[in-house]
Image (spheres, rainbow, N blue to C red):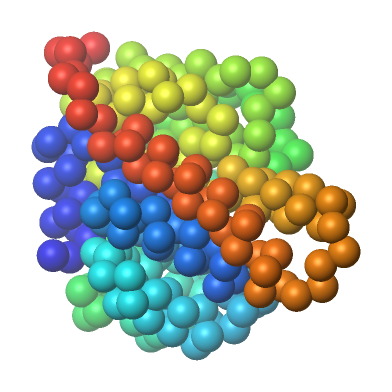
Length: 280
């Protein structure tokens, strides 16, 4: 099943589809082991920095072979693509989905580049995600300014033909200084008038009940990145501090196992098996 159909199905089921970033073989293994053990589909995400680090061809082969090896239904997605050119490279490399992030550009330019990527993706039968509104990135203010508005979301989707839309409803990339409070009522209004799949960026650190409530009210794709990097590196630092082991083949699996535990729990959350109340 293509990613667009899977996301549409899960939206109707009020179930989330977890999208996890990976940075090397070990982080990929941790994610895929979790998906295999839970028997859940997953989206594997790569940012430009990860592509630059691993190389595009290597990263794609790691993702594809990993999915095959673990027997997991999964999709390869470009996360926060910053240019039409990068999106094109990823389409040529066989990505199932690409994101073009023009959220910090003037609205007209965001629409223009998103429409261009949608046009290019058609011949690849690929899925396209965009972002509208202000989802704070690392080091930026986490205030409420720039939340996505329903009419703007509908107009943006109509103008671009985009398949999925990351919206700003109170999340931010990176860790939070205080517990976030998602604007579920705003989300519900966006969902009622927007045909695109809705995406929650910055889920790391968002309380479980808020994620479930967001899924009940229209969110389907749930992005996870910061917690993966954090638990891998913190576990590795702790492990190395307690011994003098130099064999990375003995050290890395300890950190990889912690990613598996983390992602298994996130998969449980987004599966959202509790009944949803009526939409707000």
